[in-house]
Structure formats: C-alpha cells, structure tokens
Amino acid sequence: MNLAEFRTHYEPLIQQELSAQIKALAIPASLKEAMNYSLQAGGKRIRPILLLAVLHELGGEHPDALKVAAAIEMIHTYSLIHDDLPSMDDDDLRRGMPTNHVVYGEALAILAGDALLTYSFGIIARLEHVSSDDKVRLIDLMSISSGAEGMVGGQVLDIEGEEKKLSLQELENVHRLKTGALLTFSILAGAILAQASAEDIRALGRFGEHLGLAFQIQDDILDVTGTSEELGKTAGKDESSEKSTYPGILTLPKAKEKLEFHANEALQAISSLGGQLTLLTELTELIVQRKN
Image 1 (cartoon, helix red, strand yellow):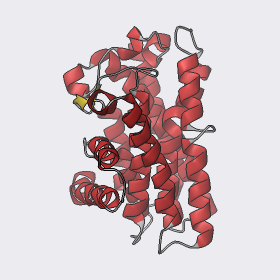
Image 2 (cartoon, rainbow, N blue to C red):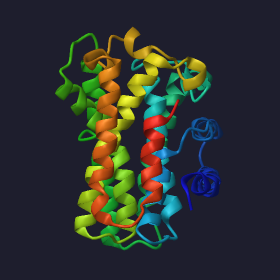
Image 3 (cartoon, rainbow, N blue to C red):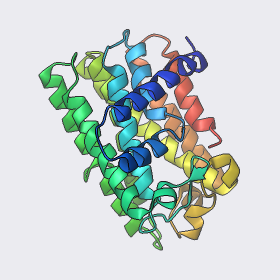
C-alpha cells in the first residue's frame, strides 16, 4: 500500500473516531460544538497518520490504534486553538476557516482547547487492548511531549524569541520542542503499540527528531513563499511577528539545503529497521514537498 492509498483508507477512519469520541461526551452543547469545530476543520492529519504508518511498517494493526491516533490529534488541535489566541499568535485564519476564538470567543476557545487536551489523556487511560504498563508508558511520553518539557516549553521559547535574533542552535531547540516533540511521540506511540524492540524505538526516535525539524523548516519556507489561500492560515506571519526563522537566519536557499539534510538524516535513522518502509519514506517526502 502506498501513502496515497493508506491515507485514503485511514483518514476517514480517523475522522470517524474523532467524531465518535466527541459525540459520546455528556458536556455542554456549546463546548462540544467548539471542540468539534476545530477537530472537523480538516488538516493534514500528519500525526495520526504517522502513528498508523509506523504500526503498519512494523508489521501489524492494533484494535486501539485509532483511539491513540485520535488522542494525539486532539492534543495537536488544542495547541492550534491556543496558538491562534490574541495573547499568542493572534491569528484569525486556520485550515482555511476562521479560528476558534473568532467564532466562539476567547473564553470558550480556551476551554475547548483545555477540554481536548485533558480528554486525550482519558482516552489513553481507558484503552481496552493495551497493557497497564504500556498505557502508563504512553501517558508518560504524551505528557512530556505535549507539556513543559515539550510543546508548551517550545511555545514559551518561541514567544520569548520574538523580536530577538536567535542563533541557529536556539531556533532548533525551539522547534525540537514546539513541533518535533509531538511528531516524535506519534511515531513512538506507533512503535509501542507494535511492541517494537528498544533498538527500533531508538531509531524511530531519531527519525522523529529529524522529521520534526524538517517539518518546521518547510513551515518557515512556506511562510515566506506561500499565500494565505495556499496555506489555509495567514502567510508572512513570522516576519510580521519578528520571529527568527530558518530562511531569516540562513537565507532561503540555505534553509532549503537544511531541509534536505534533515530529511535525509530522518531516512538514514530508520535504515536499520530493514524492509522498504514505503510509507515512512513517502511521509518524509510529503513533509518536505508539501505546499501547506
């Protein structure tokens, strides 16, 4: 199965799982609507697809895989809702639609993000076909990747870096945390569900680190070269916020070279796994070549 076939098969299943999870909640209708609004807005579903692709490449399926994939997408969506708030990036466009706070107001947008984040941990805790040890392992890694030691910490560094000239090393540290941590967790979660060896998990962790940096470099490049219509969000936002970016530090041609370097390093990291690894290779190419 190539990546296009894989996505055609699994993306509707991810969407169905997200809908089912929210529908099952006995919560205020306004909160449910705000949560669902951002979850159903589309997006590339890169993180859940990465989880499912790793599981597939390592030779199997898992009855709880879609639930874990949905939990990860909820965390990612929560981060976008909060990232767009006036106190953060102050954006009014996400995935080609008005941002959550524009539609529902800041208070409900914040609470919708909070609800998505906390509910995601409950989904993992209630998995029926994962051992207690592996559930604790998943919850621990998810808390690290999404919290102060990962995505949240990276967001703080990103805010503190505005109107400053960061070094390349400082910028990479921001994005290892802000973008790379949750991407890497998606990959490692697939490996845990597949009962991968410690050696393979280490290799996939290195793959995730380089893939996360490649993803962010392409984001920075697209912010310079893309339009708001193509991106589904406001183009040129990094420059207007006076953020350090890879093109800003390295120049656009050098940023593209750095992108290629991390993509190659990502693929080199998983060469020890053996096999064709078609899905992970194509996902790497997708992240490098994407236009939004």
